[in-house]
Length: 185
Image 1: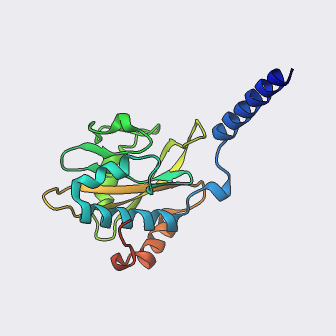
Image 2 (image 1 turned 90 degrees about the vertical axis):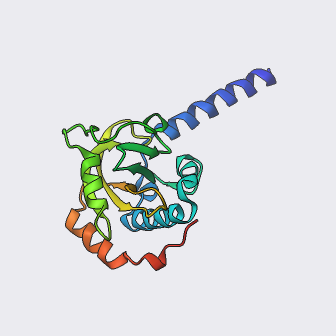
């Protein structure tokens, strides 16, 4: 009888654990624009220090580049390929410029364009939110990572938000964009 009770208890615990993982993140579990800017600048500095060997760290979903409902990913605008994506390893090595969101926006063309600006930039699109299983409005911040012998590499991360404007995010970026503040991990 005790064995059956323990088995039922273990089954219930695993069922509730799976339900908790499938639930969309709550506000406390949502990344903020400040965190995104900080992580992206830190990742750019990290790759500047480590070079292409740093991609392995960005590909780890258990690493420092994944937090709350966000993650840093890296792509090569010049060679048209994803170089690191902790949540979608199937994209690594694949062409990116033809990828569109559900509204037909060529999001990597836009990310490459704004990311090449001196302080980077933001792009709005729709994307599947981790744990939610549905598409949501996403605003991603992209920035060029200056890596020796590799031009065109950019890093990005984003927030899922229905209210923020690109103008508000650009003002925040101007306020925060000081490369000296962001040490590599």
